Image (cartoon, rainbow, N blue to C red; front, side, top):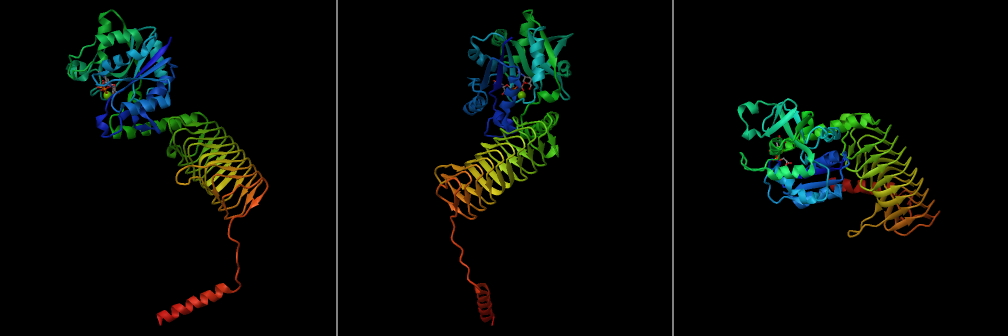
Length: 448
Ligand code: UD1
Ligand code: MG
């Protein structure tokens, strides 16, 4: 059965008190909308439509950055969830199969839950995801008759008796796409909010003789983000889940509660992560690599047997080969370290390639930026860069080349050559003592 995702992301999220569209606020380093998309992708959908409205252009960019094949449907006026679903219809022309409606501000729905909904379609025309709410508040209530869902009533339109129901609507719905669109088009807006409620499709379907059922999930899964406080609480939930998943996947986390993950962090078996490590987006760490305490990593790949940190910063484009070593207070950006390369202390390596087995001395800096453009530094295999070398890019050190400590290297160094680019030392015998004597005498005169 083909599946289409319809992700609703048009709402303003006014309670976030923000200029940023709600679904672009970040959770685990990724916009909220990516979380909903990622959960939906587990169903291997053959189509995906995201309905945008507030901040539409920015939301569309975030969506297509994550999933280039996603279609965007713009809902210029937010007239309700049924109207939002209908807005997606033109983007699903030619699609036949089931559609699943997700909310972009609801990040914790598990793929297993969505699979259970898709499976339940063999028993029901419409499948709604429900949960027992601790405090049902403003959630829509699921009115059941035995195992059948009769209708959904919004809290604002509910009787006292209906308000007493604790089985609530998560908003996630699955139905045949054509049926869903036909029912959504039949919905009216004669209700407390004057909106076209998607929830009304259930009563309409039942009146036509179609069946509707409920798949239940844990309330935690349906948690929606409406405020900054909820976003902060959701971050804690996300991190707890990510830590548990990393441990299940065979990583060693020395102090899990101090390690922060991103949505797409990938850590191989037997990798060891020390305390207080922060993963930004786009990090993959292979089996057996080690990241020591207090590292900040984003957009990088660390291969088997490499050791990073403590106190290292890897920025986007850092590609660390097997058994390479990046030590304390080293920053690496857009640079490839080949196998066994070592940068152990106090260095900045940007827009560079460091050859196999090269050794970069403490305090080495690639001067990659001239104020206008970035330039590359090439360091050959087994090169030895002396401490405090400035490599003024564009520049190339050959294989087995060396630089003298304190050199400012502005010209290429051939293979096997030694470059010394610093002032020659001058030594004056006894001058230190004579100088001190003179300084003390001068102070004596000014005090007297
Ligand atoms: C909705 C459900 C309610 C359910 C609750 C779960 C309806 C009528 N009600 O209520 O039964 O318990 O979610 O959280 O569906 N959106 C659009 N365009 C619109 C309107 C909404 O894209 O025109 C998006 C919103 O951005 C949001 C989602 O749809 O992501 C739900 O809309 P929201 O206004 O939050 O619905 P609720 O009143 O919470
Ligand atoms: Mg809501």
